[in-house]
Image (cartoon, rainbow, N blue to C red; front, top):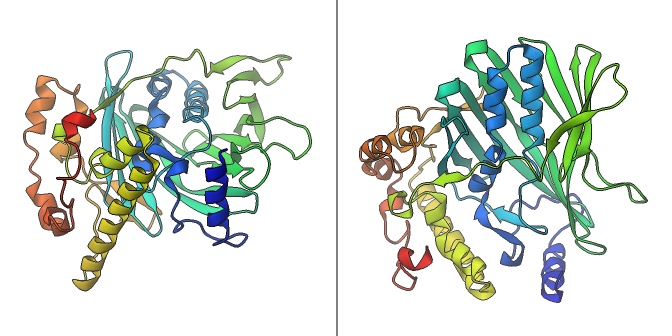
Length: 398
């Protein structure tokens, strides 16, 4: 860590007390990953073929093992060092899709449905295999002395339609260690689960923190159970890979290797087709400044976005406007965010390979006007984007 970064951390710490909520603390650009959280959650689909492969398996046990493999594959993707993604603005979205090895398409859409508290809702789907994935994620950030913790709330649901199975999963916690003294390290910690009510199977995971003396970083232990009966155990490191052992067997066998596993490419919407509230539009100048190593420029661009959002929220407050998400609706009964954007061409175009004739046909149906009617501030040059004359063209940034 550089002397500048240490100085910035100490400045942040002077504003905090132990256990304080860091959600509203402004994070210096030195510690930002060059993308928003709405995009970062796409990392879960780097090995997304594992979940469509799981749906094809014959027995409930095989399918549970397959989902566990996918879940454990989700955590090793990330930037070098300890970096935090941007806090998404209210209403920010991110869209993309992934082409599976069998040429089927998995869609992805995330929307920031709440700002205080910061909640990201997600939707993914593979129609060819009748796989649906949804969820919501709320990182409750805490200051813990020499650490900062992002303690997760929320839930994921994976549905295998043809098997009539719904799997629920929880999120682990993330910690930046050594922010005052020692080596700065990112750890994933906590106990999580996957469960399927129909089959009675569940998996329990323990992402272990390194002990103060001895021990290793990034250790994970897991087990698959039916009732209280332990059927399989899994062990390894989320940065390297895992082995799995069936009950009664003496040794385990390789389960997943982070280095050699095939990685899917993320297919992104071309910049010229993005809508004003999409992540790559909202943060384009900040991202360019970070990638260019322009720390001062990045700080200015981050402040520009935050200032704009304060003005937008001020107008909402003055006009008694309550923000309504575009693609998700709050389900208070189930403490969940239901996806309601199935009929929107903004989403439907993702069901096809990006750039294909079917994609273009659906994309051309998109009309931004309804969004501006619901969210009028986005069509206001004083509030919804400002003057771009001082910025490079998008062609210069690509």
